[in-house]
Image 1: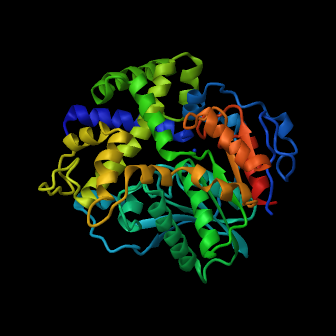
Image 2: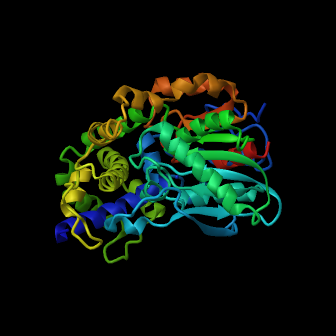
Image 3: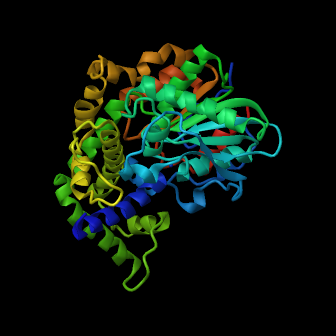
Length: 450
């Protein structure tokens, strides 16, 4: 990778690390279109005094997240440990992907008998992501042991747990997750006293949690007592197409425009912090830059689009290398752990979600005797196909925002109609921007303790 590409990658990772701070007979949930808290619970008594969520622009909320003063207070220590599983598939690890081994999950274990909550990570995220830690602390605080699993779109999962390592087919990704959950249960046997099971996930992980709950209804392994979907995609491929449009609209030059974009945005942040001051990247820096007018709407939109595209690029590169698909890396090229990846990074980053479907996912499912149409792959990832189950499963609820950029108005309406009083839809918060907001965390804890 050339020096210029290293600078682009370093700047992009810094910027996206910031975006990633935000992009974090059963119980009923208060159905609210305002900033009123849920109707009952141990932690909501003072929520009427909490200031409203401040960001009315969906993309701004997605990037900036929740200001520190409005975040829920959670325990710093939650008996965390990182547990390693034996690979669930027999697969050689390509040298260039060795960094993604082994297969791990994050555990927060109670020292007494307690229910276990599985948390499914969002697109591209590992089990050690900030949102895994946030949700683990929130559930641990109300008496749960928690196991956070990597997303099937993460390279770690693709190598160690995926029977079919080209993510995107809901049916097989969910089957792989279900198998990993059983491996986690077995791994904890004798170490953690489990009294029952619950399930949650965010973004793509929330959509997968819905399909996991349906699979478990058929298989009967866990019998989930609570299932909570946090900002799910209704139709996965429609949602990711919206992110493609967002990137194209706000960074029309694509990869070639990245160096100037990063230099301008990072330079503006440095200037807003004051010349000569060390620049520490965190949500507070972003918030001050926003308050100072450093970002315009295109900057925010580009950051959100870039975050999704970088996840895709990483996933597409790994899928291509593992399956020798000859799309990004030529089949006759054998990459070593220290080989330059600059040309392959550019190819991966230029690949849109539509390109991924057409060039990697569909061809993979139509080789080696398999025959699965593109329309079938897209339909399988649509929650409309399991609407009767979602409407009837009283152990399941959904939290989302009416302005979530991965949803359109019809999909928000679908969630309202399907879940009824089990839907909590706030007017603002973007995509997971208000996940750490006091009222969100208190309502989540309320739900899991009913």
